Image (tube, rainbow, N blue to C red; front, side, top):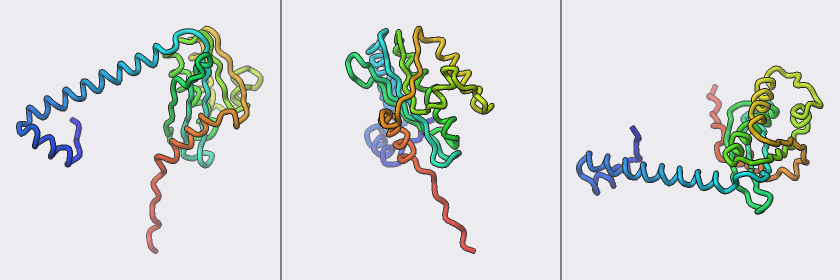
Length: 193
């Protein structure tokens, strides 16, 4: 059951004195909102079918390990438009784990657009070289993430992993910082001794 803020609950009680009418109204509003969300998502997915997409991903943590987040930008280079932005906090992780997790989420999002070619841009040279087979994955904590990316990559007809300078990945980086800034870690006061 959804718990509404008290002010909204009072307003609904004024408009619909009977609980059954209030519940019916809330259910109808939620149904319409969810249908509109589904339609919007379908429209986004239909924007780019086939063709080439550019995927920019970044992951970072404040501290290593520390509070971490991912940022994703999917761009249609033909129209010069951003098709999708995404950012989220992922808990306490290392920078490398955050970079891998950003790419995993980016591949899942890009798959919805069915590109014929996906060019993945990362500012982590280590991860690009690992994915391109130039470096081995030495850290066992990264192996499952590496394997998951390779599985996801099989779902694209053509996929490329490219290293780019950090300055060229500023949009994904800004999304990482946005996720970390908007949801800061709670600061606890020291107990008085």
